[in-house]
Amino acid sequence: MQTLSPEILRPPQAEQLRRYDDAATWASEVLNGVMRSSFEFTPQGDELYGHDGLPLSLVFENAIVSAELKAQEDPSLAFEVRRAKVERGELDDVLAMARGEGPNTMVVLSYYPIELTRATEDVGGYNHQRRQTMMRVIYRQPDGTIAMVSQSLEGSHREALEAIRESVGYQTQPGELLGQRMHLDLDAEDQEFLPDLLTGAYDRSLSEQQGGVYRAGWEVPTDRVLINTYDFVMGQGDLIRTFLDKGERNSSGLYGFAAAMQQRYEREVARLSNRGYVYTMQPPNFMSNPMIEMQQAAIEAKAERKVFSGCGASISANGELSTEQSLRELGYGSKSDEDKFGPLTFKCSKGHANRRPRAKSPKDFITNCQKCGISVQC
Figure 1 (cartoon, rainbow, N blue to C red):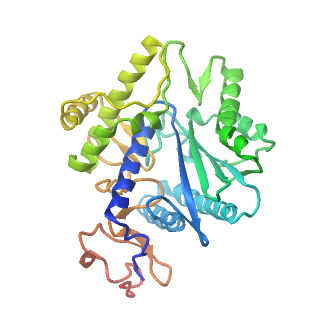
Figure 2 (tube, one colour; figure 1 turned 180 degrees about the vertical axis):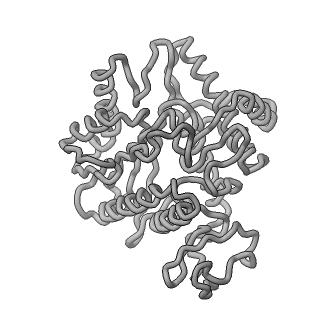
């Protein structure tokens, strides 16, 4: 049955907050710098909820359905089905942690897909030049909430990633790293500093292999400052608000948003590198018109044929998405596709995967399963 969970029918304030967070997170992944972000999730019963009221189980379940549908249309994306199912197993471990079962800390290395090793262009939000691993450190806090810290690691260098595992006493098995989760029992102080310790293990391994100095996998020139991209983006509230409130929330609009954010970031890096400042999050230097800034930045980026890639979507110079989902509502990401009524993908009572179009009202919902024809009306 195509039902609308009460959690999906969120108040306008929560929906606006989700869109703001989505835009900021995607932009921070697009920028060429170190990204570290952290979020908290609240347990309630057997579920975990984000601050916008969305239950995590619903998001992960719909990710599997979405991956299956995409793989049917494009078999080259079949690896996303496997990854979505592995991530669903990861959620089971997190839910057990929230219940107080087992160790209180887990580390996951979301490795660049091996299927894209020979890719010559960005696919599905995966940047073929940067080949990032996203390292997740997930832990139960003393108050029972679950904290998740995500750290980008450039290059997905296998030996350096194995050094991370060895630093906490884990041997690496052959094959993909995503499902080789590490479980630890730590006190609160050690939990807080664990991302730094693990990132340090990655960088030291790269230095031993290749020489030079590294920060989260970036080889750091002595004259360049690397800024935490998430902190930087969160300081550009004028650009984010203008894009969400007045911009075209489609691929062309998102391209201009990313281009303007990239220009601001590069200017700030250049300023700090020249003067040797240490970056702290600050209000932006307000432009007279952020909308014009985004439009001009898009023109310049298109002339250079730039591609902006973040979780779930790659935006190319012609403004087209490399994934099927529309970003009109900024419902992008590797987890699920949504509109204001909830997920676009769902299963009928017989387990068949369906994908409905974006809806302006409930009248636009599909009424029958696209495979077997049974009713999926509420």
